[in-house]
Image (cartoon, rainbow, N blue to C red; front, side, top):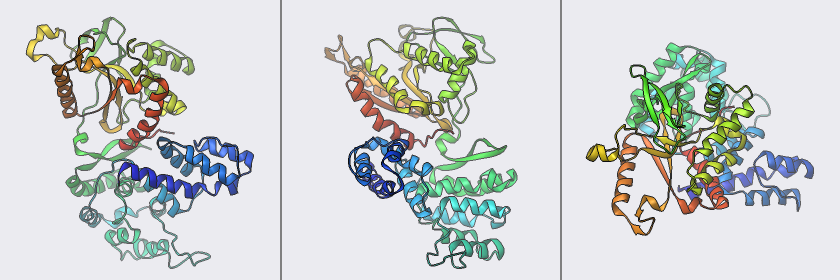
Amino acid sequence: MTKDQDQVALRRLLSDVTAGLGDQHTHKTLTQALADLGMPPVEEGSKRERVERSLAQATDGRLLQVAERFLKTQRTDAPTRNLLQDAIWATASPPEIPLRTRRELARALDPGDLVQHSTRFMALLDRFWHLDDDLWSLGPSTRSLRARIERHFLRNTDWPVEELFEQLGAFDAGDARFARFAEALVAGDVLLDETVQRRLTTAMNEHLRITGFELRQTGTLGGYPRFTLVPLQLAHARAPKNVIFATPAKPDIRFLSAVDNDIEVVNGDALIYDRTVTDDGIRWRDLQSWWQDREQITDPGEAKKGLYARLRASLPDNSPGQRNLFESYHRILGSEVYDMPALLPEVWLHWDPRTVRERGPQALLRFRMDFLLLLPHGQRIVLEVDGSQHYTRDRGRTPDTAKYAAMVAADRDLRLSGYEVYRFGHDELRDETTARTLLEAFLPRLFQHHEVTGRH
């Protein structure tokens, strides 16, 4: 399906699942319920009409947020939950895991490893699949999928893992559901044994790597390793050592210790984030904590205001587009920005003590990025706002093909170095209202594509 088809399908599904809100609320409480879901306020009409009109007024960029909040705040049955999850996950770019790989992966797993803690294992299955599928039973059923799993996989062990996957529907499930299920199978809170976690991960990776992905340890959770399915090209991505940002002027820096990679800003106002960048990347909470310690600020609210003002002040005066991107990013995310990636402005990619004229043909093509997002699992996202100076000379009067060629060559180098580059024309962002509308549609898709969610 195309992105537009995904949006149409999600809107249609939300129309079905939100239709019952009018029956659950009074007119007064419905107003708050719509607000809680991130849906526009509508005060006129019957309760059903208010819900329908509110959803119709929600932009495509807001649909993902509405769906996610609905899952968090409303009780749903497993089939409805799965339909919503699949619609949300379809907007990302999940790894393609073909049927053959799924079957070979299942054959490689030892049932005894999976069911050492049967209650936890069944709770895991409940999160992804519809187990209580006997619609004719008024009480505990002996014919439901749950009962058959307990009988054939937990007690009698006459089902291999491949048959379990068959009965669950894992072989026919969407790629995103199967990928998340694979990650959950090796979670520490299910297995409670790091040795078993690593044994299962090794067995699964033997087959997953054929698809270009592998389960890699990306942190810890509850003292156990946390494994995430990541592209192989990110599996060995290096963690950033120093992030020099928030200055458009070339920083005057020196190494206090070249052995330890300790950098000092001698003159100027560049900021250097020198803390360890974890597999979560740099979120606003990380940046604010660093700033609060750096500036010795006791009040977190004051630290947040001061950091925002400092970053905004680093933006060039002659680029309202950059300023609108920065401000819109924070207004759109609101309080959620605390758990989302920090938008780092004016980030230095290269630093050379010699000038381009001194360096000659060996000069680096790009020194600084407009904005950088360091996402989980080593993903690096560059946002560029292109004014006419990127492809013209004589103050915008004459097209300059050499400038344009240098820009696209630098983009190629960035991508080959592991960065994703998204460009905006300055005219797209020049007007504040237009910029916000554009980014309200772009940011949810960006975070879905790169599978970024806030931590709560």
